[in-house]
Image 1 (tube, rainbow, N blue to C red):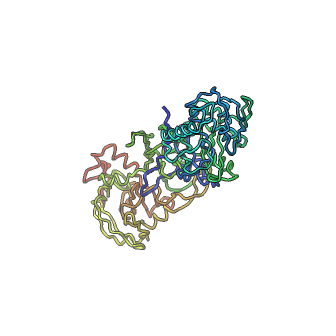
Image 2: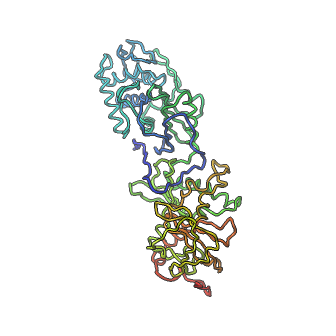
Image 3: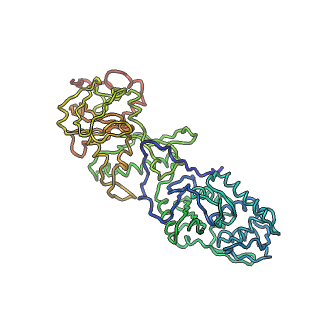
Length: 543
């Protein structure tokens, strides 16, 4: 059974935002409309929005609900006698008193030329008085409109009339209107009526006021509206790539069709919501391609942001009973915790808290370097009382293989100092990591190489620091090197001065570490010893 309510579940506000999947789209278009929403029709996912929940007058978009109630409570062949009470301001259908058009004709008069007279006649007749004037019948119909809004969880909507002329207490939102349109599109007859360009019947001829079908391919239909309270507003449904996109905008001006076209194209450029593991994989790939495809293809000498995937997309039952998806990469994990949340909010994809889990879980896995040589591990970072360092202080703290911190002044030779302290955790970020997280460079946007921030905002993919920066000495292919490490909520960063410049700062292979730990947690929870059996004849830790 179709979900009647449009899922508009914004992610819970966390300290660090997630990642917006903008593979095929640039920034949201600059439109005149003061409020708007773009919805994926099949799933009901809100793909992008701007102020979608502030109520205001919705003008003739009201008539979509009038049509819904009429289709569900009336029958298309019923005859309706037009009365004097049906004639209200802006009665653009031009209905004649005493004529008896069918409800089918009146619905076309309602949705094509946006006839207020048609709205009044429909409300009266379906409300219980098809042949005589009856304000009570219309009032009953408006009551049904509000009942339907409540049934569809349109919590910011209230109807006072069936036509949409400004009236106190008559209001809705773009988000609620999108809920309504998605529902209406499933009703027999609605799609055909709203998509008609003209209609002839019962001695009347009506023509569509919506001009978007003449400006854009694939338009299923739409509804116009315009009052002093609402400004110019539109509902547009456009079929693209096998799915309907629903666009609702409030508060535009004569640029309303340009606004609608820009929003349609923006929505069409975004990946489809993750309603299956394969769809989630496509979205994860889109984010991976932004930074790492250039590295993988050899077009750019730069450290990996994610590295290669370590497994297929996994599907889980979320706490709210829905689905969640995740995929592990060498240097992190991508997660979609709510496939029906706002896609363009910056929360749709979030990185897992791998570093926090490994530290809190006491994983005995080396932080960096060869995994089969004993060295400082995540376990050694558990229960450490970190002493924040003032900005500009040289980083000289060093962690031994046995988990002991000592001050090694020799480490100051590398010129790394403490940078900004984050009030959220009271810890400072190393200067080299500050520079790395704020860098710009080549990225892939909309299938084209452009220049942009690698991380936007800078701590987007890693979280706040959970350790101060510190030095360790590790084995890399049997050679011992000094490495600066700092762990954040989601990942750890490393700085190896002996590496080539393009590879000195790296995301650690925390995804690989996490995979090992999850595969054999008991094996890697030991208090002592290397993370894995040392190679025959391999050197042990030198200090």
